[in-house]
Amino acid sequence: MDVGAEVEVQVAPQNWRRAQVIDRYVSPIEASGAVIVVKFEDGSVAERGVPSDVNQDAPDV
Image 1 (cartoon, helix red, strand yellow):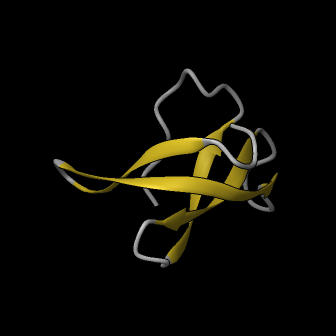
Image 2 (cartoon, rainbow, N blue to C red; image 1 turned 90 degrees about the vertical axis):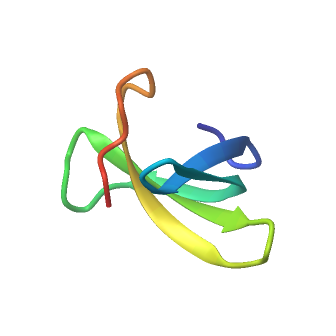
């Protein structure tokens, strides 16, 4: 997932919101993962953990 990419983020079961990736960095907790910072359409910002293989399911955070 590149910075600037449009993504859909699961914020609750059966609840997805559109967002834009505004930052990405190596996870300080999981050596094989990354953290993305997303900005939602309402202006709120959140961090989400993602696996190194973006074809895998992202972990719940």
